[in-house]
Amino acid sequence: MNKIAIQGIKGSNHHIVANNYFGEDIVLDECLSFDVLVDSLLSGKSEQAIMAIENTIAGSIIPNYALMDKYDLHISGEYYLNIHHQLMAIPNQKIEDITEVCSHPMALLQCKEFFKNHNHIKLIEGVDTSAIAKRISENKIKGLAAIAPKLAADIFGLEIIEDEIQTIKDNSTRFVILQTTKPKNGKSEINKASLKLELDHKRGSLAALLNMMSDCKLNLTKIQSLPKIETPWKYAFFVDVTFDDYKDYEKAVKIIEIMALEFKILGEYKNGRI
Image (tube, rainbow, N blue to C red):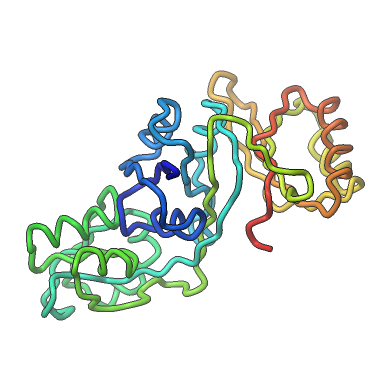
């Protein structure tokens, strides 16, 4: 059985991705932070890990890019999950009975419009959506609700008071599958790559790189800058590209190796949106 590290506990969105990507015949290592998740991989406690990397509403999760880079983690795949936020509590309560809602800051942010119509509810930030649902269930806490996926309500025996409370209904998160060794993805399966590079700090260097990628028939789907902490006012770029022909990508890589001051391939894998 695969040992998979997830951020959060059973019932979380990371758990849903683990089931959808690997199937349910897996062993989970539940980690309450992304730092602990990385430690699980590095120590060999888990074979692979699932890490949220960006959301259509909140944008990139910048610290996770830094974690992947710092510990030389490899991306072997990706998964896009539509996010559904449900308000859940001990059964036989109504929204008027709820005085506090505790959830992950990201979930609270994505549901803030809903709570504008319920000013009697105090919002409290927590570590993990499903962990809060579990605590409510185990301690039978009335008046406190959690925002979590429906799976959490099923696992912990909570009742959904309000469903689909996210402000923007088309809300999706991209997750990457990580491991410490380079994945053995076949070239015929690979049509996407994640790269990290640093360029000479002079006019036109980034534009020249992007033009070259276009000439090599690469489609730029993501570019994220990250400051180099040890070198003020210099930045590294994290880039995602898709392509139809692996040979076009190989050609671009050879040119990037010449153009970039530093260059690292974070992963070559199958596009999760196809």
